Image 1 (cartoon, one colour):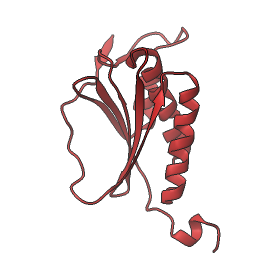
Image 2 (cartoon, helix red, strand yellow):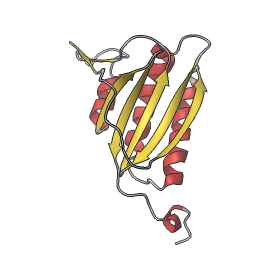
Image 3 (tube, rainbow, N blue to C red):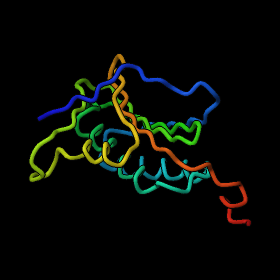
Length: 154
């Protein structure tokens, strides 16, 4: 059984939010670089919880972009958005197709990535672009740490 996760352009924060984006080449090495970028961003912003969940989801979404979403010679981007104790991770690519959660046997080497994302994230979905799409995840997080806690000067 396959479940489609494509959603229309979603609600989004009305107030001020932080945004950081970076582009990555279509390469397996980019998955690791995307994780490092997101971890560095969350740490700098003072978000000290849920790193494991977020980084597993970044790995899955970046891997899907490299394997299925990015046409040869193109790049994908990863964005981290903060707003109202919520962290949103966006992976954009210019490829076609709609990511789908594959429901079925647990055997096999692939096909479980979006099931993992749906289990770890508080919300996720796909917003179509022209060209391509944004696959996003959201995580409810505690308030960011005070600057003295972030830099260890406390």
